[in-house]
Length: 277
Image: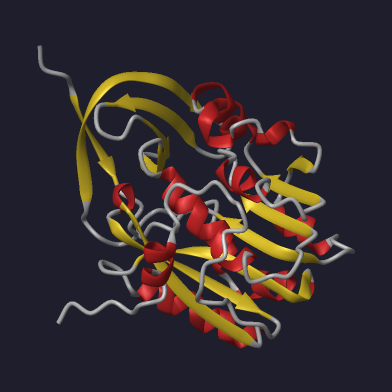
């Protein structure tokens, strides 16, 4: 008996790239005030999360994405105390943050409670109990207003947002890639801290990273980028960081962290520029 094949769009903005996956079952479907949430069980990727038809994560490779997003900048901060997550309703970022014992406060601002509820029920391994960690404070709120009210700065600010897809109006994350928003983040950052965001696929749309770095450079004293392999995102995924001075250190010191993707080889690879010609 053959399994049904479903067609999904990879999170690559502006390009006609998609993936066909054999599916077992659609586990969840809900249209919230903000977006359509789906969780599908597949043969290759395991369970995957879709927002408005675009892949956000899969059980198969989500640890690669979340470990890259969190640990590369955070390992460059000496004894971090406070972290802020913007978006990230699936709980993968807070799971990785909770591995750092020095962190005392982890604030998470997610606008759509539907994402949190669906992922806690159908993708529990992604958060792996992190929502119950006493250091984690979940705020169902608009991030733009939240950061304007911040009074105590953070050592790491993670913008775990969806991509802005060309041709789609009213995207939730559109304002998360603006100079005005980055200016608010700079005010909320400690002198030794970092802002980090995903920066799309480096091979098929390198202009996404270029656009983010352009805005970062207009606001922050220091900026940079790195990369990793996330198959469900089309391979080479980019990440951009910014700070009020310090630089992300291109070396791995796991400090007892139980990591699945990041090791000496993948960490070194993260800082080696790509060449295809």
